[in-house]
Image (cartoon, rainbow, N blue to C red; front, side):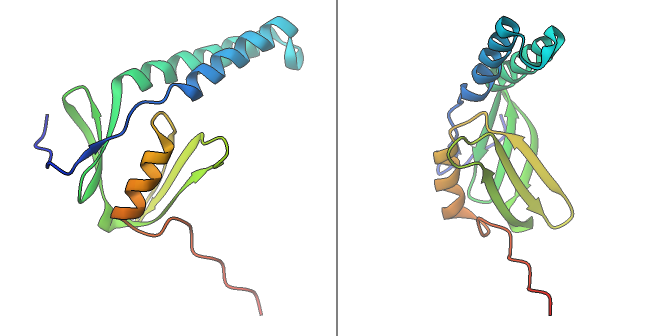
Length: 137
């Protein structure tokens, strides 16, 4: 594993999203929601994929960046200095984490503790919401 500073935090995994998708797949197969069984299969495959990702991927919040790890191998690092803003979509049922860097945008499924993410990002980096659009004159 790359050298992590003592004040780095690893976010705990959250299995809510993949398990929710798997339950929705089972429910839709039982009552044939949307009229097609193949829809249940697609939801189940997505749920299984996200379940695997939840078990293997970890997000580390370091003092200077958000780092993405699979096991001991760092996959990617996103320095906070390049972030313009971030948000977690739907606070009541957090399923998507969005952040915008200077030259790119990123969407991550919420496969980790959303409250810990929010708390640590508020303490470490850019504003937590996109700037408001200026009113048209």
